[in-house]
Image (cartoon, rainbow, N blue to C red; front, side, top):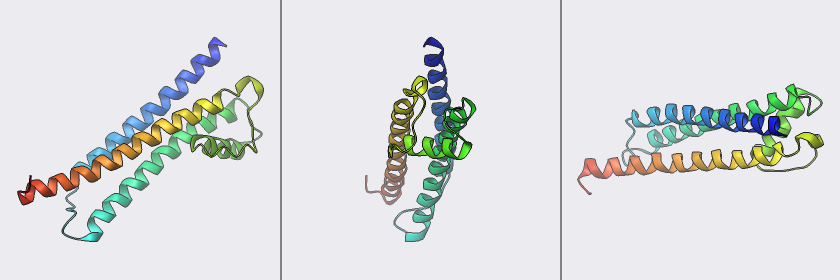
Length: 144
């Protein structure tokens, strides 16, 4: 039981590390972007599209970590099933058509909780980028 808790802790830590590194890259990209929201629709839209895709890639990497673990431990019959289960669980869809073996079943809710936290961070990040762009616009226009 203690070994499984340690493994679970490492999976959560790995997920958070990937997310932190990815958000750091996305933040650097957003801060160095010169798009101004009021000038044109497409520049700011293009920035938001790029950030959305970067966040999706980050989440896919995190799903892959869990999936590869489930596949490595033979919790699921093949790598495709492991990725499917991990994606459904991380996104908290919870279809229930695939289940982990009894000895690993607590990893499902843990992955879902971790996914919720990481998605929440991504939403907050997305909001912060948009807010910063509009505050930047107000500063430039002298409206603060």
